Image (tube, rainbow, N blue to C red):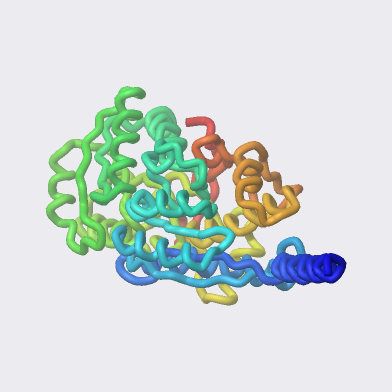
Length: 378
């Protein structure tokens, strides 16, 4: 009887082990949780499409550790409160990692939920406060405001001769964080500073432009989302206001340039990604072929996020979230290791990224790279 029981036990172990082996060899699931409707829909669409292009490439090449990628999509409607519910739903599906959200206000609202579930979260958010909360689980996909704006202010003062900045910023987490950092940097480098808040999805800026004309500023730092930036630039040019305009990625992205048209000529600033950078050319061409759009910085962030995770998973040799988190915090991903990260990339303890970015100018409707900037220069 004991021998019979022992045989049954061995058989059960073999069956159970076989089930685990089948699970380990089966598809692995990722969640994409982002702004697919509401005022952030264009950002979410580019983020999603960059991610899906990476998934397709990886699956066609054999997957990650031999496992194919499957995914699901959840829409946050560009609302922080909805993003919490979206993450709670995503967690029930037990993905290996969640890609999103993009808007900083949403990430601040939902990231504790993802951390508690122990699921890695790669985000498109740039607000400093996200990375000051000790959340070891959340990873930026580009240099954040804190790492870039001081460099920009110094550059404006030393290279452009700017003396007085008026910053036009969206009255949300992204914009407010940018205002605080830019204001402090302007004081540090001896530049005058004034701030004017605008609303997300605002259409008419005549009042704000009139205020700017009376301020005596020589440069506008424009830090809204792409749509507001384009509308603001069109109205600025229509009203004949001749001031230099400087900004960050949302001002210089392909989406803003397309929407703003000729009004965007001459705009300068720092871009987290540039489709004009030679190592990105193949990705940009494929993205444009598939989606009939030049990829925005959100598309490139999403694409690189997938290859970042792939590199870390393959480095530790397993779909082990704890090991992958630790590896990312302790290592640098070079372009020799994975060409599709485009630039050497490493993470600080707070989840922010050290990686070069680009000083660009808009000329003839295109980004022109003036200089490659180190994110550590700020």
